[in-house]
Image (cartoon, rainbow, N blue to C red; front, side, top):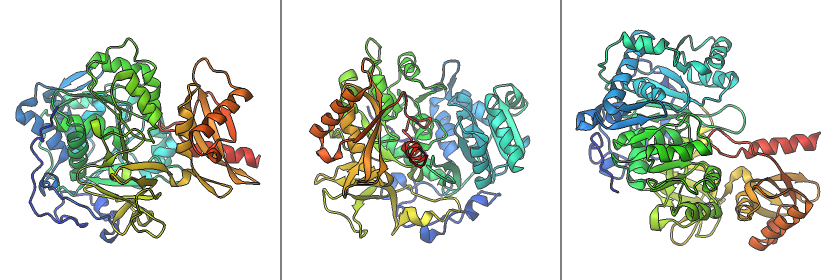
Amino acid sequence: MSSRRPSGSPGQPGEAGPASLDPRSAHVDTFARDHLPPISQWPEFRFDTPALRYPEVLNCGRVLLDAAVAEGHGDGIAVVSDTVRWTYAELLEKSNRIANVLVADLGVVPGNRVLLRGPNAPMLVAAWLAVVRSGAIAVTTMPMLRAKELVQIATKAEVDIALCDARLLPELEQAARDTGRIGRILAFGDGRLEAAMQSRSSSFEPVATSRDDTCVIAFTSGTTGMPKATMHFHRDVLAMADIVGGELLETGPGDVFAGSPPLGFTFGLGALLAFPLRFRATAALIEQPSPENLIAAVERHGVTCLFTAPTMFRTLAGLVGGRNLATLTRSVSAGEPLPAATSDLWHAATGLRLIDGIGATEMMHIFISAKGAQVRPGSTGRPLPGYEAVVLDEAGRPAAPGVVGKLAVRGPTGCRYLDDPRQAEYVVNGWNVTGDRYLVDADGYFWFQSRADDMIVSSGYNIAGPEVESALIGHEAVREVAVIGVPDAERGQVVKAFIVLAPGHAPGPELCRVLQDFVKATVAPYKYPRLIEFVAQLPKTPTGKIQRHVLRQQAHAAKSG
């Protein structure tokens, strides 16, 4: 399968790579530009290929949608769900009407932040496109967020306007009362936005924004304290689509993309909106992405590319027997480290080798990966076209092959926090330093070791939690596992494993010993989990990422108690 880059890509040859900001802006509300970090704190941006040098006047919404219809894809299917099937022409008409409602009924001007709240569904896609095409900034939030978290977002991004699924209104309305912000809310799904749309024109001319106008403010999932808000430009949306959707996945008009990541995360925004629309493919949206619903969607919609987290792929591997997954040609894993055992399990079940990838909200999407014959199970891969990555030693110098250090990356996307002193921690000497510990081998493949806060120091030994997890997940009794370090008076820390058992296995001291011996036989014996707790489930984010910080907090509370 080959990709064809649609219109909107070419720019001016010779565009400089260092941090810069085009002087042109269509934003009437200058909040975003006023709160960008100083350019001296930006990473070095690299636009090394002509395909990444976008025109100075650029609206990514126009490229993703208006251009698709202009190119003759109006009758192609843009988005589907269990109840909706919209062509590109129909999606454009819906987006136009919503954009007119935003401007005429809600008073949106370019540069305003518009909060979007809803599950993955066609209406949320139409609303997102309407926001960016109107020159405003989309702040898409997770459906599961509560009022307290929405307060943080609305306050940080100074949000006064929202489009919200009616089923999710109570928490948003509470946040509005708590902040005195978000005074203009229009619900959809109960007929209110739909009625306003019918009274507005089906035509709308996208605002002529700059390629360096912010169009997305994405909040990191975070572990503690105030979440960080990342600011991404119109050019960033196209860059992630062209590199990941084009170069890595070779997306084409016949593709159907589906998965579990919410559109509120940049992983989902790329996988289920930007990638398919950029290459005139189809997004199959699943409101409740349970394992069974994901498998059913592959069958029902003829999904060709599936996106989810490693733990979900491990569960799905046990459900594929007897199911018709003939259309599936690619499977993309991201969000947390992919153990080689899970990669092998999925390959045995489907014949497909998982495409692993590391990305970050700060970087917008995946920047290291591998596909096809280039995949080495257990390795994340190599930098994607347009990116370069290094492993830095403790002195901040490039480390030799095989030496564990801090992962640093730079390319056409990068970190710009919204008014946050933590910018200086993430960007060092022009590099985005992600907080991941990696080693790179002699062939240039990157191998994940741990997050910086997942390194366990026990009796002077550095033990990477994910390495112990990878060992444990290879045992037939283990369905899911998370490993953390817990305080120990004698050793400083000891390794503790929280394990969800596979069906047919019972917890108990004997199984603990079996699993401990299994780890000792798989990796260096000092890395084995001295403590094992069997649990019914692990705490996870809505995207399926295991929340190890919750387990650490629980362990700390139990120790204190």
